[in-house]
Image (tube, rainbow, N blue to C red; front, side):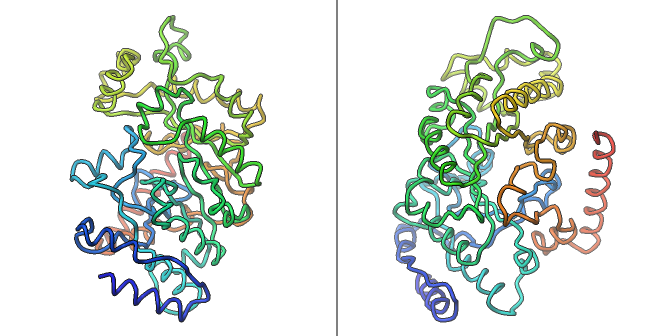
Length: 413
């Protein structure tokens, strides 16, 4: 298998305008230890927003530099939850994607006339998202360098990309040398500045302080950064803000004053989305922190189903207060609906400072002009699910368009 990768790399070196110094021998480590059973994880992006529960995602063309795990091992991560069920999470470590397949895709689209399923999407410079399921800037990239090579390839082909991370490693010079502010945006996740709680929630991730320092470095370098306060944990029991209920208890996981701290480190954009947890994570947090999260939920929400979440009215109050705090600190505000249901994409748009983009990158990074919502639903399905019948795609497309139309009419403000 290694020989095939080497052959492909050599062919690309001969034919492509991009010259790579990537060491493909790194894959030998994984094959020799039988960590890769068949083939390497694909180097071709997927369309996250082909699915109905995230069809409104602006940047649904996504890929991870490492698959089947992440050493940050965040307890609330839905990828961890899903892959753990089939014993594919950190078993025993994340696996590097096939970087030659990634390079070959860009070479094919931009240097040949050959067919490629993503040709139209890539030719339109539809922004790519890196880091949805695994952090691209894990320490392991110092050894394997897959993320660094991805950045170099994207830089060569002048391709707009947003990177999601919880790591301060993003500000190492080897990355900064290629992070062109006209091409790339960084989203840094910081759900809490409480060091002890962060260690429980994100046991393998760098501390909030290191992330704050990375934020300042990137901002000073002119790279457009958004802080992801996502998941947003509550301060008070459900109903305290929306119904003026009285309570003396607080989680201690988050405080509105955090926004002042973010501003001191140069934060210019904040994206938030309220937390929704399954019982396994709820119980872990209760065990490790002594905070009974279920005791913060309202009786009505407990009756609606399993897991931890808050009422719509209370979530809205948190968003409104955060919006005001951001305004006071010169920070632009937006919300993320993923995990909460499509209605949240539409109902909170009045709070967005950038009405054209819930990730608040358009009009900030010059290369971000298009987005995956512009791709017809039927085309997304044809690319992501080629086995789906024509009529199946039609029915799904009609349903999704009707649903979006309905929500837009209901929540248009």
